[in-house]
Length: 449
Image (cartoon, rainbow, N blue to C red; front, side):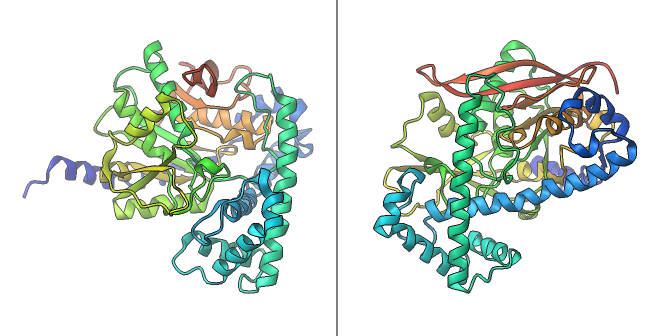
């Protein structure tokens, strides 16, 4: 029997599976880092003030461990978000940060803590609670000991509230700067995996802008990559913080959908590299590839009006990557929630290849034909300081083809003589002219290797 076109394509993808995983993953060499060490002299950490190859090697090893350790702190932040906004373990009303005092006085906060502690003691098939129970054990807390678990939850809630106050003040002081410059706002906090479709909408509008400007051309993108796509545990924002459906990642499929709809992808055959330092994200995508199927849930709170163009994007998201499927029914507490779901086509799930890669310190050594036409990274570099951002930009440049594009909603420092330059910014506005997001496009020059 002769296999059909879709099966042939899937077999080709499977035959190439592991292509990225088999690529050489290398720490940025001292020679490659030297221009950044020179240009960022004022921002270097103490261990690199008088850099040498030996100091660089020691620093990169310790820094890789330090960056990865921040993931656990981000998981604890997500635990607090779940405590306040989760509905899978309690029937209590959700609690907004600004109404914490009222929730504490009324007993709602205490009831939510008790319910979460009970859920941690017996997670059953709740994957979020199972993960958090393991997290407590790694922190030396027995999740079956109600008192200790409750104290742990309250302590982390207090910590998060203090951090949010400090971040709000930092954001206030940086207001009025370049729309892309968020001043490494989260460089000293845990790395969170929160995700929503708002950055995906900004990327979609930016890709349309780049097509209009001629920066990207029809059928140009054959290889694309996403850095840090996120995993939807529960977002810290009430309007997008849901836990009634399984954990999911949306950005790789949203990017594929936009590239296909705008005619920028070379189809069939578009491949997507997924770069992340989170073992949870890597494992999540690897399991999806083994299943060969994936469903994304797309809830929208109609009580929080979106601009018409964002609503239109939400209604069409996934149309070029899959087909509509019945969504999971939300709990009754969500009276104003409109839902839809998309089942992603198997060949697109298989086209996403996850790779453990610390973009601040590592790059893939790729032959010219395997380098990327497009790399996207949203809400990633805000977690790193200026020196780390400069290193990341150089590593991305090394993986792009000449003329290749990086899209990010953070301002990145360019090294003098480096391969990457800031080529422009797309401002994404709502119908009334308000700022929704800003995405910078960085382009690799046509020279060099």
